[in-house]
Picture 1: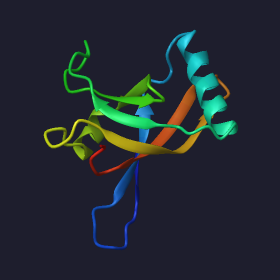
Picture 2: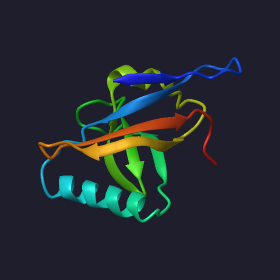
Picture 3: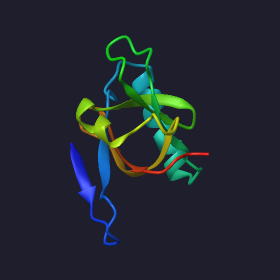
Picture 4: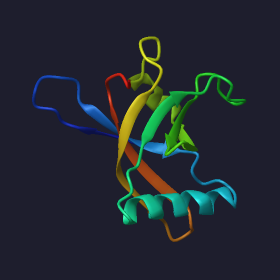
Length: 118
């Protein structure tokens, strides 16, 4: 699911993207929940990077989402169009929303900063 945050300065709107692949098996699912709770509830800085993953066994064009150096999921194929890795190696992002559903699955929405990361 992609939503768009309108930008009034004439630049392209910045998308809000759902992170795919979060509903994995234990113990990684619990680890992701604990990471999010620790970082966000204790107001610890959260570093989010969006990085190409050309060695992904399912999709050589995969783009992974990394939080505080831990791989947590992927950008969906439909949302890969927002990223051009020919000009930069990664993008930074921030969390817009996250939570845990009744069935225990985790959701995370991020908004990329569409400019190069140092």
